Length: 227
Ligand code: APR
Image 1 (cartoon, rainbow, N blue to C red):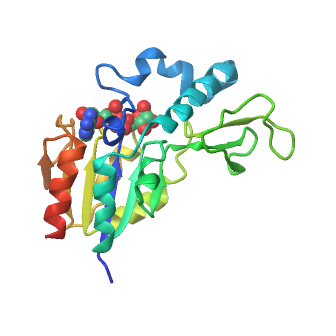
Image 2 (image 1 turned 180 degrees about the vertical axis):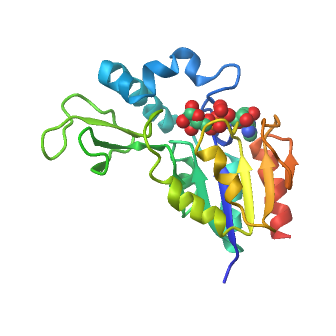
């Protein structure tokens, strides 16, 4: 039985793939105010603007590739039962070959019915247009967890962390909950790594902090774990 290993990732792991982070100086949000694009109220107020914003982010995926960090995490699957818990809505972990990925904040390559978020459609990298409707003729919306909406995947994510022998946190500022609270579910004796070029404001007691970009920092942790 392979030991369980959990990876919690944020926007920083996709930064070297060309996808901007949210809170770094040139953060993605600077082109838009968060309130204007990432809340249900904003969608209700201007569904066209919000849909256009996510169509642009989805289209960008066709020009991005998984980077070394995504690929290094896949190496761990030969020795560990790996669960990737990501706050990212891109598909780079899956494209790198990770087999168990929990998306806490939704997925760009999916859409759902505005009337039932459980009614999900795989749309790949296609735009959502006003003509796209669900089986009852209701509009489709991006399958994204917006600010103020519940995070249904937090329960399975917390359960995975509770069973982890190793926890690796990569590229997240740890400021958005409930994702940022997942580290507190790690059991006693869990080996913990945090990889980020900037030390996040969080209690990192018990963590091995690798102050590097994901592409080099993740390789260091993986090499150590596979030694
Ligand atoms: N390698 C590793 N980490 C990096 C890199 C890199 N090359 N570049 C930046 N980082 C780090 C930053 O130092 C920061 O700690 O990535 C983190 C990015 O933090 P945020 O921009 O806050 O992104 P994230 O933590 O994923 O945001 C969480 O907030 O806006 C919401 O829903 C959105 O999922 C997102 C959530």
